[in-house]
Image (cartoon, rainbow, N blue to C red; front, side, top):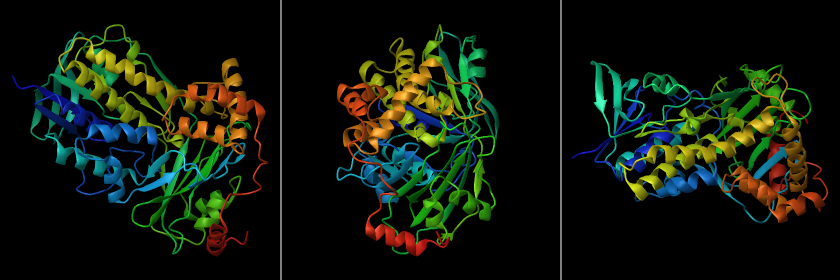
Length: 466
């Protein structure tokens, strides 16, 4: 008998889940409300799509496993993505000082537009599996609280039911999964939101001549001064362009949409390096602003009775402040958990959906802890405030970051956790704790750790007179 799997959402999480299901299902149908673009173009179903997206090493690793016969790293690089070694290819000002650049490259991340990444992943899945995509909106799940049996659709031709042996909700931040579950009689879903009121503002620039190898540059927000956070970054993307993304929290830190004010904002950051770089660069777009940035989590792994044949992944499960660059990696890690459980026990195994939901929650928990433990310190944050445990963790974390500005062992631990190649317990290994307690063996960097060639490029681009 033919077995059909249905995936709701054709974004990154949905297409990776579809790739996993294609190994065990006879038919995999991906449903999406949008008209999907033929090329790497923005679509309205991704409210954060125009802003910076970082694919960390911990997210790329499962993607390498999920699409049969394709190295997603090579595929994305061939499409125009850039590969950034965190240890040597990034210039970063943290609240505790400048990170040094080391000879060791450390974990690598990929940078490109979200439009390119989604288009490249979707193409790789569709070209190498039997997955098909249909335009349709999902109205509800069918079945019972014991087992999901399909979905009810809204299409151009009207409503219809689509039977399924397995359903994955990867419909993103706007998922209606709590309402759908309530329709099946599952009404004990606990949710939590921590919202720092972050606003993103992004503009694309042509990479100036001779600056194609300038390192990714970021000035991080400082959540510990009792003031709204403000940050900015310049990252290389496909098409010989720079993406300049600003972010600030409510209460006065919000970046503007006006182009002149956009530049002034960058120059008023704790270091003006972002503004100095772009002051002599050619803008290619207007400033795009987005406010869909809160941390929101659905604790589906804690539901008393989880329906068989239903899994929720990606932003439908949890969303994070995008400043931390975790969402895509968490989605990929969740899809890998689905893939591994399907290969281990098959599509029909009792309890499979609950096991996947529980395992997906592990990477969600790690990302949630990292994001929320910083966001609760911003004034005006809604849904959370620092408690005693937060203060203890923050004191240790700040000391460790300060140490990492001048200690390779501490910096290596920070990169591993930031890249999601290991969990936060990496920071508690004896070698890391010892390095943290000893403090940085090197003095604080006096300024951005640029090579002489990079300083020359910065001076050449700088139109601010600073």
